[in-house]
Image: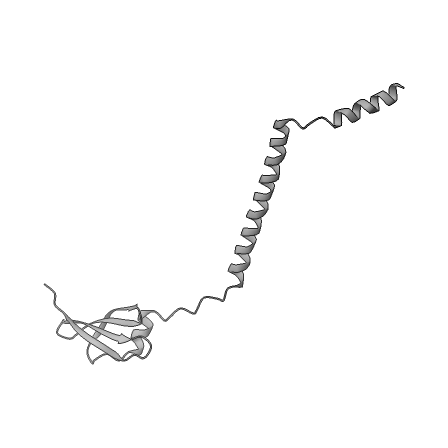
Length: 120
């Protein structure tokens, strides 16, 4: 008889409502688990997207390499070369010491303009 009574009492204890703090804790664990899964999936998706992208285009030749392909007037020496927005800008110094900026199209090497530089 005592065994039957113990079983009945155990069943009655199982039917008791869940304490509010335990219910809150259970819901919090479920919410944090879901948040963790979303975060892991987001990171995995970002890695897949990054890896599956096309490789970056080959960089353009720098200004010095392009400057070697451009024909400068005789007796002018190259001071510097800069490549920006498809325009190669070359600074040169003439035999008299005068400095000049020459602009060339970076893809064709065609001259676009000449500017004399006046130093004070």
